[in-house]
Amino acid sequence: MAMDLQEIARHIDEHQQQGREMDKVTLSYPSLKVEDAYKIQKICMEEAASRGDSLIGWKMGLTSAAKQKMVGVEEPIYGRLTSSMEMNSSVLSMEGLIHPKVEPELAFILKKDLKGENIRPRDVWMATECVLPAIEVIDSRYRNFSFTLEDVVADNASSTKFLLGDQAFSPYEKAWDKMGVTILKNGEVQHEGVGSDVLGHPVRSVAELVNMLHKEDLGLKAGMVVLTGGFTEAVNVEEGDEILVDYEGLGTLSMSLSK
Image (tube, rainbow, N blue to C red; front, side, top):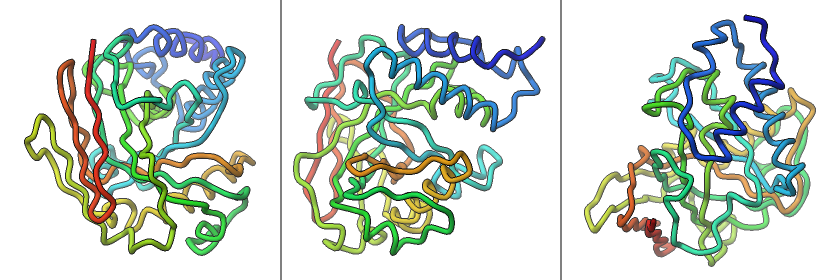
């Protein structure tokens, strides 16, 4: 079957908009490459922008060695964050979601543009305004949350929603790689993680993102949000669940799921 990236992107975009399950793209297009998948992701986001849903940041996925090994890759993946994905309250509606999961993360907010190759952690610190605790909601559009690397990239790395804490912290507040995080569902501990689970240090996730984007001649803009990747395994959630994430020394962030 001839591969029309625009057509594939339209198909995925439709399912993202309607919150409907779909078959893996690679079932119909087994020759799909990761580069093609990123092109599809870009086209989907251009569709979103044409509806007034602007690009406000980026997210990193597969940032733990365990997850990379599981999927058989050696580098993380990235997805795009749009204005409609940012939650204005801590209540997440199940409407339009298929099989959501949540992950505790950190968000870096930039104060200046960051672009180029061989970007190092110190370059990231100089460009960072603040760090915020965050919860990301991921929700693959593929049946049974089952996909290949190419599929997940095309589906914008399962990006769906994200919640940022109200309190911002100085980038120099603490050693982020040493910070522990605990995620609870309905009062029960689900997972515990530490900042070093994210590529050794969350700042390395931002540096890696900039280096990956450079290959596409893209970069980060001042004011953008960067979600650095999950500290722990993702937790399945459904209507009625209460999520609480405890960020060591920073307080907590909670999310409740409604209809």
